[in-house]
Length: 247
Image (cartoon, rainbow, N blue to C red; front, side, top):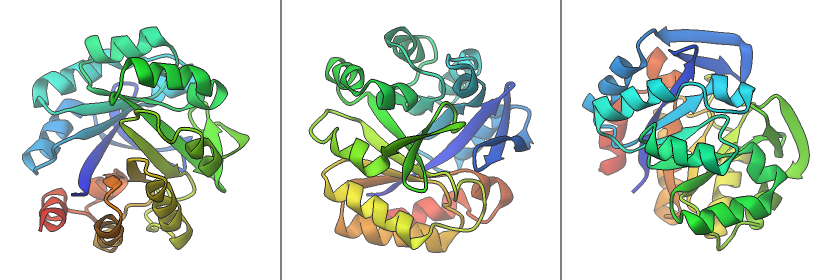
């Protein structure tokens, strides 16, 4: 079954959303991320997607204490990304922040052998953050675009004990314009490789949820969908969306 993951993006301790990963184009939705996390739990969320935006820019975790408050208050399994680029920061995210799944993006691109080794040491606990602009991998908090194809990077990780591949089309993220057909096809391609895929970027309304549910019915490797701005602006009702996915 496809799982809906509400996103909580942390910047300076607050809950925000960026448009296309642009730090200069942000909207603050809550000063208290913990209360927002509890809201999504009450709506039926079974997992939260947390992003340390300060950490993504700094290259090291910054909002660890806020994440810890969220995991303790909700008791929900949480996945965390943003600036986690060393074995030490992976273990800190698990032991200090209390998450059960850690998302690696930048270093997985730059040192895929290191990433594979970490996945072997922590099977089922690491997710690949595969962020793309025009199908090319973006790194460093989306501030840099590489010359590596997103699909090419994913192919190199088939058979590795990943928790998930979280694929985001940056062009769609935070824009409230829905998921384009090319990105839906990318989700299918990744799932067809046998990789557990979580869709991210552009999940704007129930049409998007329905499109993802239809793909998941054919390809159960599509295991999740992350949504952020849409649930804060009210174009997706978390409780109703979860009920629809479970029906």
